[in-house]
Length: 112
Image (cartoon, rainbow, N blue to C red; front, side):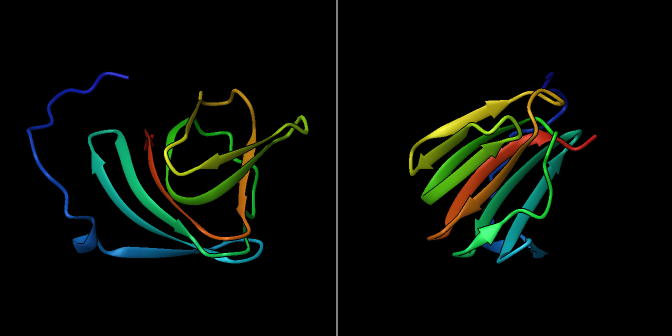
């Protein structure tokens, strides 16, 4: 990833318009900013959220609050608690998220 042509700026996430995305169960609220081809999101999952798809997109993800369960298509599972992160490349390992208690995440990936 090459970060270029982005002037210094700040983001007040409470002022970013939310979008809502239904999961297989529960829902996610995204607040999204785009900087060139870089997508930066503050995401909140409701308690009981289960993603409605297996994701093949690469991300760098930081769990800010709550607890996030990430399942890989090979059966491995990982639990992130506040202060933990994961990273995965595009098309590397399909994954999907769920949470029983809810979670708030900060996610960086490419929007292309």
